[in-house]
Amino acid sequence: MSGEKIGLLLHYLKLYDEVCGPEIRSEAEAFAVIIKNEYERRGVTVATSPLCRSSEEFRAAIANFERECVDAVVSLHLAYSPSLEAIDALEQLKPALVVMDTTPTYDFIEAASVPAIDRNHGIHGVQDMCSVLKRRGVHYHIACGHLNGDVARRVANLCRAAQAAIAMKRMRVGLVGDSFAGMGDFQVDAHTLAAVTGAQVITLDSEEMCALRDSVTASEIDKQIAEDEAQFSVELSQPENIRLAAKAALTLRRWVQKNALGALSVNFMQANLATGLVKMPFAELSRLMAHGIGYAGEGKAGGKVRLHKVNAQRAKRVFLYPAAQ
Image (cartoon, rainbow, N blue to C red; front, side, top):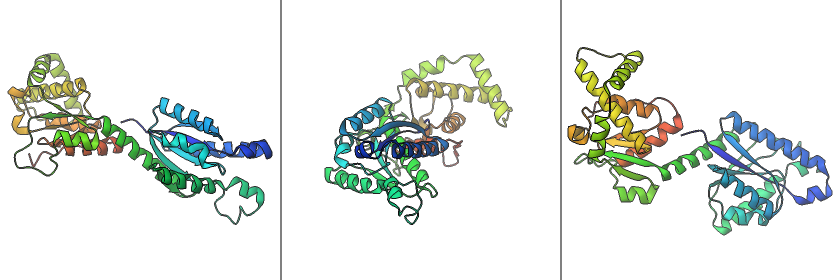
């Protein structure tokens, strides 16, 4: 899973352009750049809207975010902005909505002059908008605070969760063999999994896997063994077993790639010649997990979906420990 992408929706007030001149607008735009830079510093890709003042401008901004396939829209009030200008577009919003409630100035004592209040009263727009969002039944998340604190981190985490939810809804999970008899901790049937999470279960076609196994060449096996020897401590006392393990690894890898799987599960009792696997591919499962592919043992579809989310979000190596198997 790649880094999350957000749409930064900038709320502004048309009256300021008509009455106050360009100075306040310039300051608002500068503050928006600071916010954008803070998210980019955290590895988030940011698509920024123009300052939106009317329903037409909000609709255009939301449409652009959806074309750019953002994972979430972060709403930022740079001034009070009447909620009815934005609400129709937000009501139709497909990505998750995260409201960031913040101001340029840290405390109100420093903002107590009229000019400073003009630059720091976006919270009134947040209150207005959230009231209408609730009344319209629009789901949203909100994070409040100043950039001196952790508000940007909390918003980024919410957007990361939104990205994980999108990935789960689109996920294809592979199943090699049946669920292990009597093991019900994470056992979820395919219909329930699809209904609750959107994930689609791809059941092994033995003929397909056998064909993939037979397509593995001796030179590919040699290359895989060489890579393993360079990366791991390999015991070479049983070279034929090493070759069979490499063949099983390459077979499983091709199946995962061919079916665009985001997670999988293998019942070790059914990893055999009949299913196309000449060995239980523990090493390859560890490699797949290191690349963000979820894995759970013994046919646990729900478990492997959970592990996909954890692995992809942490973006670091996770290794399978097979002692229980």
